[in-house]
Image 1 (cartoon, helix red, strand yellow):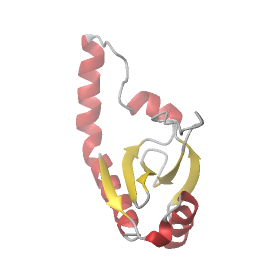
Image 2 (cartoon, one colour; image 1 turned 90 degrees about the horizontal axis):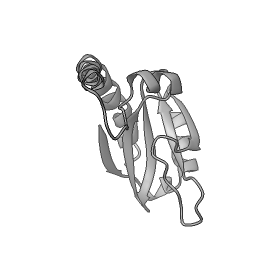
Image 3 (cartoon, rainbow, N blue to C red; image 1 turned 30 degrees about the vertical axis):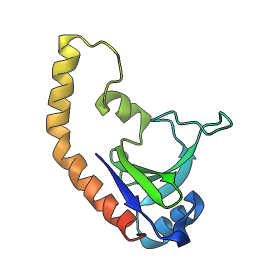
Image 4 (tube, rainbow, N blue to C red; image 1 turned 180 degrees about the vertical axis):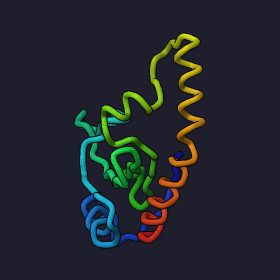
Length: 127
C-alpha cells in the first residue's frame, strides 16, 4: 500500500512535516533513517524518512520524492514483527514460504488497509 500526496509549501521539509504530525495527531512520529528501502542521497548517505506509528504492528513511512510531493508506504515498524509478518525479499522461495506468505497477507490485509487509511488521512491534512 502506497500513495503519492502533494503537500503545502509550508510543510516542505521532513522536520516541519514531523512537527505537524506531532501537533495534529495522537500517533507517535519520528524522523529516522530509511531501513526498509535502503535509499541513499547524492553523497551516498542513507536518507531520512518520517515514521508515523499507530502501534508496533502498523505505521506509515513518509518521504519526499520531490519538493512538494511525499510518498507514503505501509510498513511494520517493529523489526522483529517485520521479520515475521513483513514481505520476504528473498530472490528464490520454496513452496512453503510462498504458501505462508499468501496466508499471512490474506489474514493481515484488512487490518493493514484500515490502519493505512487512518494514517493516510493525517497526511492528507497537510495537503
